[in-house]
Image 1 (cartoon, rainbow, N blue to C red):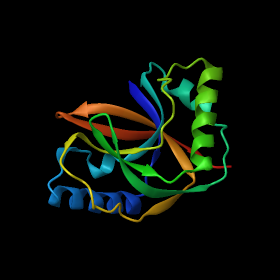
Image 2: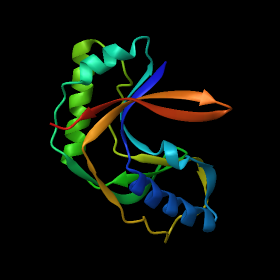
Image 3: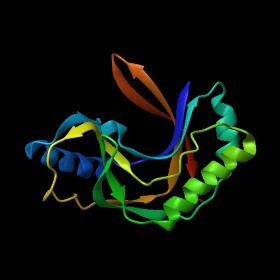
Image 4: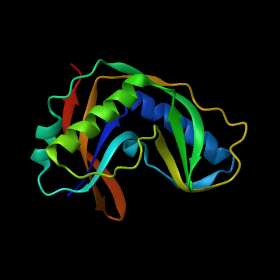
Amino acid sequence: MRMFIAIDLSEELKKTIASGMHDLKLAGVKGRFVPMANLHQTLAFLGDVKDKTLVYEALKDIRFKPFRLSLAEYQAVGGALTIAPKGNQGLSALAKDVRSALDQAGIDYDHKPFVTHITLMRDCSGNRKGIKVPKGDMTVKTFEIMKSEERDGKRVYTVLYHVGAG
């Protein structure tokens, strides 16, 4: 099963981001937009995992103080357009703790350096200059262990487990 660890954004923040995506479309920015339901902040990508309970056991005891996640700016990453949260020590510390717990449990994951970003679209083209990032934030109290699968030609993400702040 294909899995990743992420912060599943609040419905309110997803709607705020979706309004910004609508503004991008109106401005003529083109690409494959991420469905609103799939918006998230990845902490670690695991890829194919045989036993989801091993991942949960490795991460279930992580404790962190709730923190704010606020939208800051659009960024191009490769051919993708992302929205970057404001610099956030809580977010960086959580990603570090998640990756450390995975390392200690011997669970493989993509070791690319952690970069804060929420992917909005892939294969992006067009001018986004002058388009303001929507103002939005949320308090992060949990992170999620998520499954990624293809259904009817679309990528669908499902929360398997929530891990709460301490």
